[in-house]
Image (cartoon, rainbow, N blue to C red; front, top):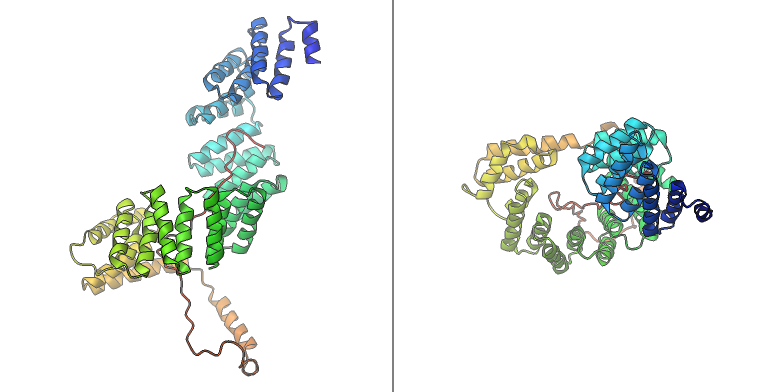
Length: 454
């Protein structure tokens, strides 16, 4: 139909533009460009043809030419919201955030109900870590278009970054209700669940993610983290290795695989993964830290100390590293690491609560080693007091649980089951992970597409 219309009226700029639009939609971009250019020859004031030409050039990543054509469309038609949005997305694609924000805001000033512009603006605010502002912009997009997959995903990712995990779970679930086959969203939902220590649910999400996208390394990595949290170390190792098969340079998988192997007493394998991590990223303090923990466990104390020292050189404000180093030696006056730690005391307000706790524990050990026991005890008290504030403890619930234990495990029940279990008299010990070791990291994925809503 469009070619017939053009044949009947070859001097019609509109006919050339209509054919160009069809050609662009079918991916025949070079032909579309020629048709749009012919339309503009016939009618240089044809704003829609200039806009169509700009969108085609943008698809071909000919960004500078696209910008000129969007600007030409706006010069002809200043209230052209789509052209302002096109300018925004073109700048956004080139990470020119200031220009992109300006043009998204212009598009929204022209058309406040432009959901795509609100979503595009939100993705930049999120990228700049302006999370509260991003939440507002995503919510504006969803008020206009509640079924926008991109806005639901983006809002969930932003809420997750704000540690508003329950709300993030709701957002990811809404996005999956619209598009259930998006592997990255299943992965990110798993991360939000894992942040709340809902490990079995998180594992189910990661398994869905890899069922949809078998080469999604981030999901295998995060699955390994959840399995490791449940102390299923053998399964965790298998999952980390699947992540590494898909992404051999995923340093975090090497590091966390090493921790799982250490828990299985496979120390040489653990050392191998730490060394692979350092071959990829020589400046990974986490890899040096985990290497030090493995070496320390097998009695190679001098090597462990050197590994912890290298970690501290890279990340001198990570106070847990000093705890690990000081566990390998007796601290003496004049120790440079002790001096560095004492200097951090003056800047402790800038440290997170977790880092302050480790700072106090490290100083408690150091002052004890040099015989200043009162100062040592003071730091241990401070560190434990801060740690106590992080622990949620419901005394009434615990007492109720003990009452339940007494009701169930009666003398009669114990007598009835006295021959059950292992006959060994050897005590059973439960080994917890080193609280100052490398925490398992999650790998996020599925960031919103730049400048587009679903």
